[in-house]
Each structure stands twice: as structure tokens, then as C-alpha cells.
Length: 287
Image (tube, rainbow, N blue to C red; front, side, top):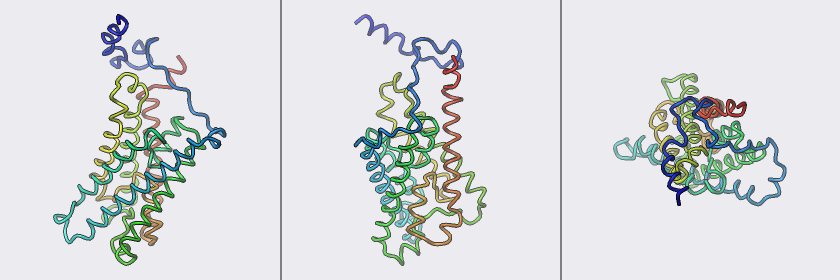
């Protein structure tokens, strides 16, 4: 009981961040980093949990595309923004679905639902290359199926007329504008993912794991509010690929590279920033 009281007393200062990481701020009581995931882990291929996680990513991305693309279709069908949920409603659909799906799948696969998130976590050595590739493949397949179901509901003519929810650089913006918007938007998302799932914060604040889906979903919502007018907001290569394949028009493919290159650059920058600048992991390792 005495030990427990002592923990409560020092809890507020146990992980001090007032001093620079790598100095006296880090004591022998500081959180110890988990070992990096191996680059290749053949043993995963024999584990049911590996395939279960991939199926969870497939289903989550399927549901994500189904709800969000249908929302986009509904807004474009309406005669005016005022008679529909508008851009705010689209942003809420994307952010809300990420919040719900991350909450549902975090304990199974980590709730990535986005190749850019998977790529960023792979760079931080949070998962193996084997698992990262498997996740990305399943995410893309789920997105294609989700967009395909929407097209089945809407019919070919209406689906093509309404743009199929495909990401394009909108009129008045350059390809550079679109690329920049995707880089910064994905940086916001992946940086939020790293911060919300930081193991050190989880060790210090017991409420963090429970609340993690909320800031992630809210980040998606805010990025959509900002960048829908520019690119329709990709920040998720699987979402962009699924809509482009099912829509399958030239305008969907002309700028499609932006929705892979931008998110992957943004994810890489977020991983570097969080791991090296915020968490100072390389400096801890040397110490």
C-alpha cells in the first residue's frame, strides 16, 4: 500500500518532459523502448493471428469506402450543398468511420486502415515488412470491394456522372498544390497516430489507449475540412486506389500518383519527426 501511495505522489513527475530528452529528464525509471520488429518474420505466416489481422484490415477498409463514398455520392446528387450534409458532412463521415473502425480493429490488427499509416509504422519498426505488405494488399482489396458495392447500388451511369468518389486535383490548383496538400494532410494524420498510440504515454496515462481512436478520427475530419476543395482529400492510398479502379476514367488516373507519393512522403516525415525529434529514440539507444 505504501508503494502504491508513493507511485501516486511521483506520478505527475515520473516522466518529466520539461528538460530535453536525453538529459536528466530520462532517469532509470523512464519507460524502456520495446525492441524493434524484425524486418522479416517468417513465423508470422504460420500464425492464425497474422491472417486474422489481415482480414480485419480488409473488412475495415471495405466498410470505410462503402460509407464514405456513398456519402460523397449523396452530396453530389443533391441540387445544392444546403440540401445535403455538404463538405462538413463528408468530413464527418470520413473522420467518424476512422474513429469507429480504429476502435473496433485496434486490438486485432492495430487498426491501420491506410497504407500510409502502415508505411509510417513500418519505418518506425513497429511491424515487420511481411506484415506491412500483407496489410497494404488487404487494405487495397477491401477498398476496391467497398467502392465496387457502391457502384452496384448507384448504377454505372449515375456512378460515372457523379465522379465515383475518385480523388483528383480540382480546377484552380496545380499538381504541386495537390501533392503538398497530401503530404501535409498525411503528416497530420500519421503524427497523430504515433502520438495517440505512444507506448510511453500509455504507460504513464492509463486513459490514452482507450481514447486513441478519438484524436485519430478527429485528425481525419480536420484534414478533410481543409483539403476537400483541393484534392477531395486522399491521405489514404487504398481509398484513392479503390475509387479510381472502380471509376476507371482518365481523369482519375491522371493525378493518381499524387495520392501515393504524397501520403507516403507525409507518413515518412511524421515517422522521422516523432521517433527522432519528439521521442529522441536514437539518442536513448546511444545512451
